[in-house]
Image 1 (cartoon, rainbow, N blue to C red):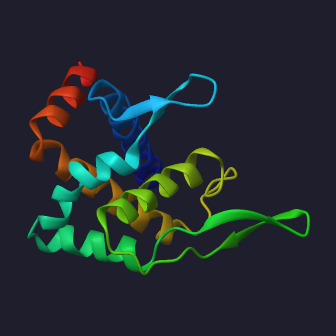
Image 2 (cartoon, rainbow, N blue to C red):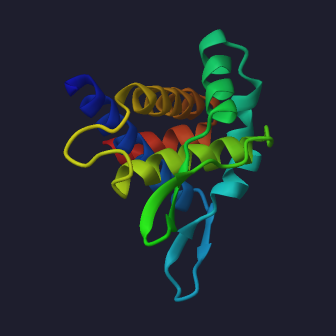
Length: 153
């Protein structure tokens, strides 16, 4: 499972760089108590939409997989955590980035790892395809590319 651990680390690192970049590029707002929040939807509708136009088989496969088989979300039901399917009829860049954020949330909040990987094959697909899409988008926008690489130094 070391390969899955490495994949998850690479995904987390790039996702963190994205979150920095969104704020640096002005894709954010003040939350209820003034805290900085990311505006992923606005980002997805402007810059993120470029990933939808990439005509590459691996990218098209990654988009299709995530949109057709999005990560489930955790819900409380009868006093316990359960997995619930999410709607997947929306084919927009906003939906795609919403699913990628859920991949991150499920990993970060312990939905996919409790000392061992839960459904490692599915986790590998979701993490790997999400990472590929995030990596592919970086050079497609000069502002994002600059923000990511300044943060990587």
